[in-house]
Image (tube, rainbow, N blue to C red; front, side, top):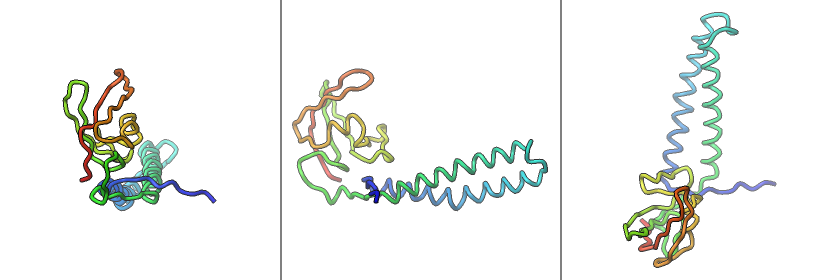
Length: 159
């Protein structure tokens, strides 16, 4: 029997995914059904662009629903407030110093929650993988498209 791999995520990411799933199921589906019915009323379906566009959109929405249901079913919600320790783990907030001693702060999150501009990086990203398991004071080297980057871990927090 196959086992499902759990995917860690924060409550916020889980709630956003659930809200998106509900929107797709309760709003988008109904709008698409209405668009298909309206397009059918126009007659010949073989040359009806509105009908074909609505059917294509229906397929896309159903695929999104299936994908979200899968992600939600495998979610393992982690609350950073419940975590402690001196190592970088999922949900930790890490303050780094770059090569110029400029501070940058990231929270380690799941791949579906990542938003580097908002200071949230995935544990599967190159920097996320380099940080996991490290301690305050450790130096990390990360290969990026623009070349090697070096960071020092200045602080680790769970908030």
